[in-house]
Length: 136
Image (cartoon, rainbow, N blue to C red; front, side, top):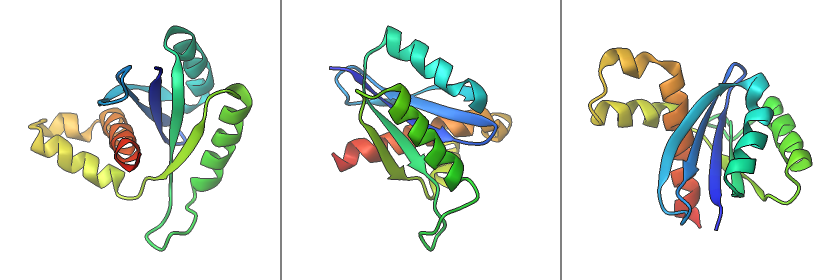
């Protein structure tokens, strides 16, 4: 059984999270620059078989597209082209950044670490992945 990888896409940074091989536990993986994402994913897929990729789809509170939505749609097209045998899923990512801040506060991270945007991106990707796992 392969791992499921989640992506919290941003124009500069991309937060990544992954499941264990049994697809039970979501954990933060890494933060990469958006231009390096596909190369990173290809290398990761060669080391660890991916069963699926979950991409957080940005939406407004009114369920409308945001400034980032078109970039994420383009990313999904690229992922489907580069990984034709890996199912690509979209999941609503509203509130994930706010929930990530709350989770880090509850987890006892100090203020400096909570301000680190790379950490927020990784935690957001983990929340996206947990949401996906719960919906299955």
